[in-house]
Image 1: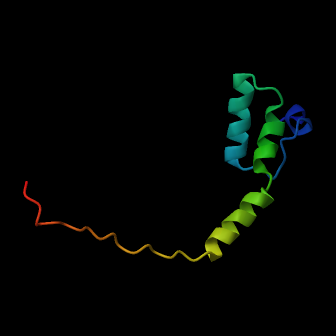
Image 2: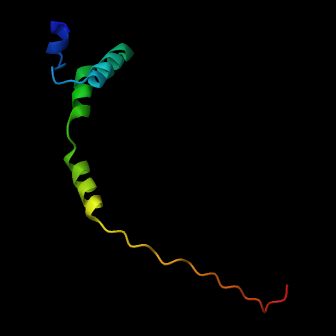
Image 3: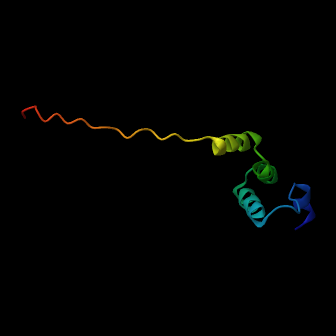
Length: 75
């Protein structure tokens, strides 16, 4: 890894997938590819909170629908 990449935000804590994403974005000509990868690596507190609420929520099943058949109707 050269100095230019390190200056642009590519860090030692990046995984191989992060580096691959950076290379793809750079080859596509996306402006600031390292910033995009860093932004994608950030935590998302709201999403984490929603997931924890959904984990603790209980699901109440709906009763099975009943079907009424009127056999007295001539058809």
